[in-house]
Length: 352
Ligand SMILES: [Zn+2]
Image 1 (tube, helix red, strand yellow):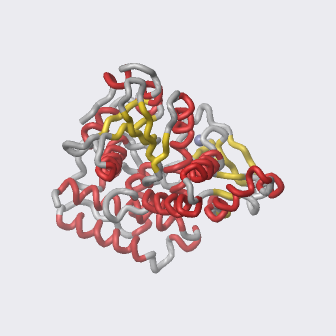
Image 2 (cartoon, protein in one colour; image 1 turned 180 degrees about the vertical axis):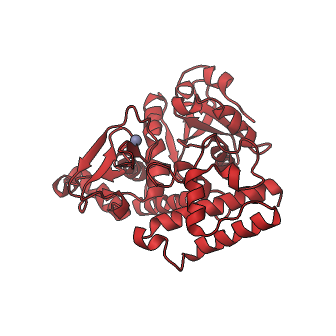
Image 3 (spheres, helix red, strand yellow; image 1 turned 45 degrees about the vertical axis):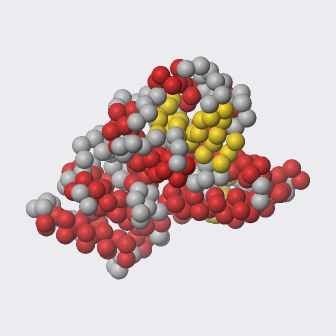
């Protein structure tokens, strides 16, 4: 394994450790013994630091503090230049929650977890649905409702909804304790994901909405609120909003291929077949690596459609293309370009 790959694998292991600690009860998180995965990654960090004369974390709490206060390039030697965007943290300094980057990193490589978990849950749902048409309806239900602050049993049992609800209800669970604040639970009105008031009192949401626009919806009954698993919220519901907009703008019928998180096929006006997947991710480089894996599975070209604001961020396309493996049949397209008839999307894409 090259030095670059070793550094990336180590960082991905730290990211999985952060998620493992986050997923267990807050009081138990920093008590000995640590979960085996967390202890293992600490050992790897110590070994890496010793062999490269790099700082060594004094323990798990120290490593978690680094994740919160320092960029990974400061404490993982050998990371490729521009692998992550500037100012990246694995733990949000204000909210104390794993960042989207952390979850994207934790999904990387053969030991990647969250995105694969999402794919498995969706594959099981597709099998339970039996038909692609029914799966599309159930998948849209999840996209529309990543968090239900006040689930209404009467509404969910209405004939038009009941069949879908019976298929998807097993995916929902209680809102994690760490999002309950004196009995209150919040979600973001913009992205629909879980939210909280950070230590400084500013609203924070999992979807990374810009703080100027962010408004929180609050329920006083945290016990009855329901949420999808974290990875489904991030990898299905978050890009799902853009995906639904893209689908509604395309005049030709869009066909869902129940592969992974959901890949779509559409015939463009000039008769060519386009296969696309919508990504809403924090790290363009990590998105490129995952997209290349999906394109390999498809054995054909794949357009990665991103929200306009994300595709237009400075350096996004450059970082995406820099990380794309040689020969990967992947192109990054902004959502509005993708749905514009004519060759506009083609000229602005970046097929590798
Ligand atoms: Zn949000």
